[in-house]
Image (cartoon, rainbow, N blue to C red; front, side, top):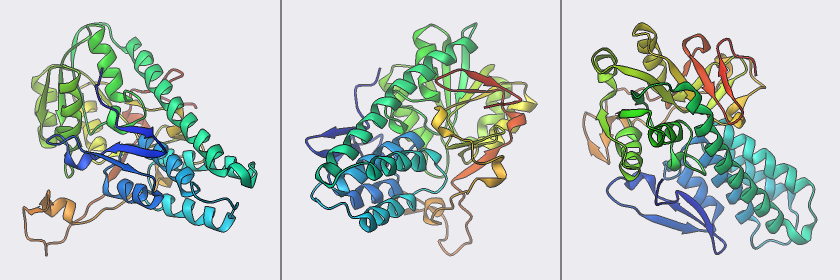
Length: 332
């Protein structure tokens, strides 16, 4: 439904849309420099758990574009650099483990080509998973409803049409969506900048609300469902997602509105038992005390800026993956 590609591999370079400039400017960056891609992930020019993993895989391949030696020390340095960019998104580590497997099993003659094939497979795999997640989510709809979402879990966050937002796109196409309410998602406004951008591209009726309006909207606007993405899901179903999701889940419980998580199976971290084991990323004070480098408060004030929170499994109605919709209590 979208007429743009957030990530593409073109002529030996990674092409990606600079999400920090949206919705005002569709600016694309072309690079074959793995360090530039690492910086793009840190700066949120590339963001969204699946998209981060895809970009990281391409970055590993590009790090060996002009190398003929199978330098394990260099490979380790590249992997560690990329791991340091965003510690919460499990897809990053999943994708990097795939490139590590490829590296261990290749000869020195075709390092770049082999890792690149791995990255392309990861990218194509995510496109397919996004489509399957959207289709799987359709079983949750019976009537035409208003829906609320938080942050951005669409084409900008993945290799395909998205996770949570693709559920919305496919439901709209099937006649199940009346109106979408998009939380603005402070402090970086992914909802008002990115989700709104995608909804407009897809010609889906929407309204932007501030995060603090969610309770009012749930009470007054007959919301039938909340659907959001995820950056890491523990074995018991506890889910890390963009900061504000936990509060939204508490509000949903009070208003008897089901909340669903949409994410690929690769987002489920079966190595951790609960959300207590999820490492939460804290980001710069400047993201809170300024917007687009314009100060909105005294930059000497103390700031806390966790990028994610963890929603307990008991508050989640279901988790939509490419394989099925899991329902609480979750057993993966």
